[in-house]
Image 1 (cartoon, rainbow, N blue to C red):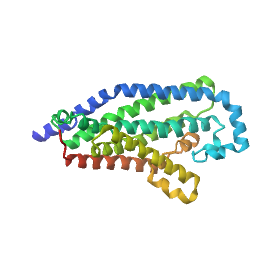
Image 2 (cartoon, helix red, strand yellow):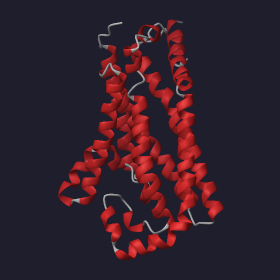
Image 3 (tube, rainbow, N blue to C red):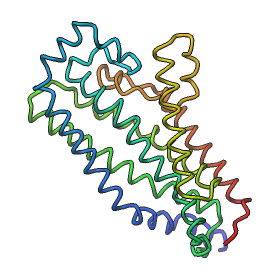
Image 4 (cartoon, helix red, strand yellow):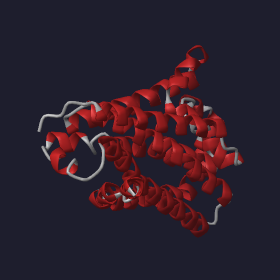
Length: 274
């Protein structure tokens, strides 16, 4: 009977639902922002198509070789890859998700509301787990709505795009953002100050992006990209060829899982002054 009660408590997910509610406004704002970005960049392409072809022919695109797929930026797929996915999806959305995830627990500690959070009949490990679960709907919502915006804009401007490839790109991006959430939670349980934790997380994401970019530009530094989670998610290959890096997906899921496990263990033994 006691085991059944414990099982029900684990799957009650009260904290997870509250986390979804707490970040619903941010989810809406980010969804609107990325829908707008998708519509804007897709809509801009016809006006820039000729000039982009001239840029490719002039060899100017070689200066963008730190972006994967830069050589194809004259095509619609290449344009979306550079302007939307390589910059806004990988980096900007990654930073925003990282900023949020790094503050979910640190803000409770800093704001002295951690005692109220811990008043729930769950362990500290369960708190971390439910915070992780509670941030997933944010990723899924932004992901799905942006996907729909790209499909709608592509149909509206009558451009060729393999919709399955776009769907696959958004699908395999989920483990990337889960890895960011996991790392962000780990930072959040280690650092007690919300803003400090978020800034550290932003620095980590930007640093990993730079490492991967250096690895793309300079062969001798290719090994640096291996320590970056951006190394394991390539939007271009999936968008263009429908080739998902399933090894990369597994690596990102392992990173997400282990970051969350370490965060759970650390938070379980952390001394918290309230």
